[in-house]
Image 1 (cartoon, rainbow, N blue to C red):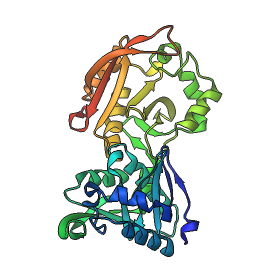
Image 2 (image 1 turned 135 degrees about the horizontal axis):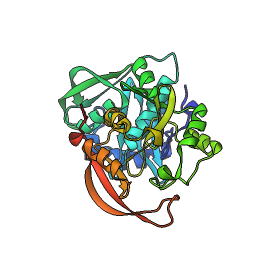
Image 3 (image 1 turned 90 degrees about the horizontal axis):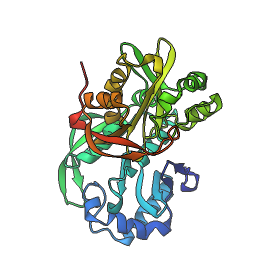
Image 4 (image 1 turned 120 degrees about the vertical axis):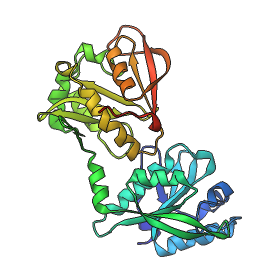
Length: 343
């Protein structure tokens, strides 16, 4: 494969494109920061323009699976596979979730070719954030090793990891079961059940729902909020073969949302669903905090959130298409260490 044949990969916020020689200055500025290069095995420090040009030439000449990671402001890092999955991002855009988004796109491309086998990676033991990201992608530890860090001019302890094809494919399905429920991707055939669930008593607890939802509108929701590996998705809650609710993970802020058909209220359904959904979110995404809210006149939702370990973070008001005017809300947050799973 030549560099010209390398496909452009797109995620909700990023474009991953082939590297060009005009990227040399951006590479020097990004990986030339010691906070970045110190975590990379083969990158020297200081990092000069000749190093960037040599790297770009090698990628292009060998047709390597290596992409420039770009947002609206331009190149922000590099991600690809050269014997194993590797990546770096410029220091100013850390903690935006770009690394997970870019790495996931590359991993999906890797496993998109049925001829490719398992994918290896690893991280320096002092770089636990990278370890969290790899585990969120599904990588599992295979052992410990010693790796030479070129920028540090020394050998350091490292964790070796692998992501098998079978594990990747299993996690792509995002299906969880409890004694009574199946939490799974919604299908177009769920649209009539989803439409029937949206009545005024439910809609008024959501900002984006009107007093009703047509079958066509339900189909749009199912299509637009299908799970694609990132946040901002809704899954169906199934009981006895029928769709009885939905549960989802928002994007900004990273928050949960859920609803249950009126006839299933008071049966502990949402507690049961959240008890498996929340741990799965912390495993699948490199997040340490999940938000939620409810309208003040919906105290039952607050009781469920507190049962799971959510703590109140504030109060405010919010609009709802099913209400005549803004209404008071209570906001919550859950950290990984506060998660409680009821017995």
